[in-house]
Length: 486
DNA sequence: TTGGGG
Image (cartoon, rainbow, N blue to C red; front, side):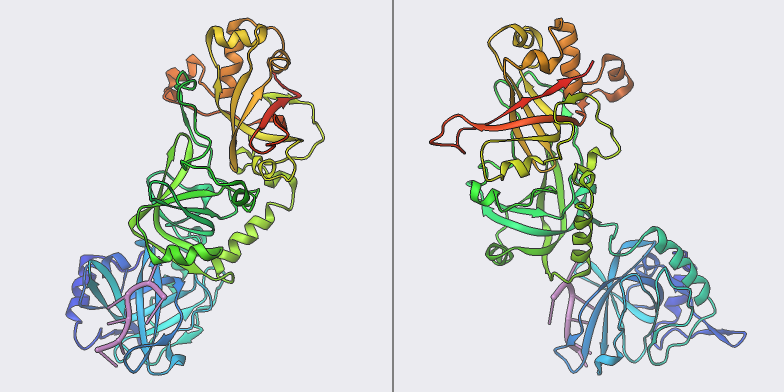
């Protein structure tokens, strides 16, 4: 927001301290100097005027004094993370009643305070005033609520139009700091609105939250090194101990279940253990380990419980419902618009099944078609690889989609058809590298080296058991009816 | 005064 920012404006506001900003008059209309939030913060202790958008709406409640109070969070272009504004009034009807986040508020003569290193805006009921306007879809210049003693300013219409234009590109509800699983970024801090599906304590004492928002985490880049697969296989899940089957079966089959780790014990965890809740995980971070996303709570992180009617929750559920409107929307979000023509599959007409749907399926034995990435293979190079076509070996692939990772075997009888014939070692290596997303030597020179990005491939899988007395413990996956194209 | 991610 290009409010009348600048040091001069700050000095002007400083002159107006005590007694409130006295508006200069021009053509009969009051003229207030609005500061951007960033500039206003340079003048703690002074009264300032701010034009901003409401990004969070608190509930009105009785203060410990004689008043009613309400906290809003407002933001502008200079501070998209926003700042908290506290209002007081002896009658709740006098507090701002914001119709929707994204609405615009004009604040006159509010005070900036700095407490514990954090800035706040205080609305003084004797000296301050506010006006509320519709957000980006509105073209109305008349406020829908106005406090006592609020005088419109000459620049209001112009600044309101600018603010609405900015809002078009920065819609509220999805704040810059609020990410969904589909757009999380490594080592950034953000808020996540998610359903807490399960909470447990790892043997290390660490707490693990299993959270979900109906979207898929992005495909990760993997390390090129594959020769350690025999000794230390690529893990199938970020936690040390996998979830017991009865818990696994309660998790959703579409959308990633992110593991969020926390060293801190808090009473929030006890609350969350009892039931499934929607929550806002504030100021959390995430990283990739072995190509898997995992979240972490920081000392500054907070968990806020949300109701099912919360706007962000309703939005997430709407998005999730949309994924069921068509078959293709259930497919990994990261695979969309990336045609997968690496393999030919037998199950041309079969529907699509996520790995989680198969893992939680009621019967061990079943066949399905899925869309996955090959994150690791053993063996994957040299003589060992070639002996698959002639010898008595089977190939172990580590497959992933946004919902799970599994080991799937290419049985010795299927290896020739999987690779499309008795290939030379060179041809076989080329096909394997394509599956694993290992860059071609010429690509590597262009700076793609260092990581690999396996493509999405269609593949037919069969789930079966080795031991009828321990069907789930002895479950295996086997690839069939799938051929890598030339 | 209150209140300060209620």
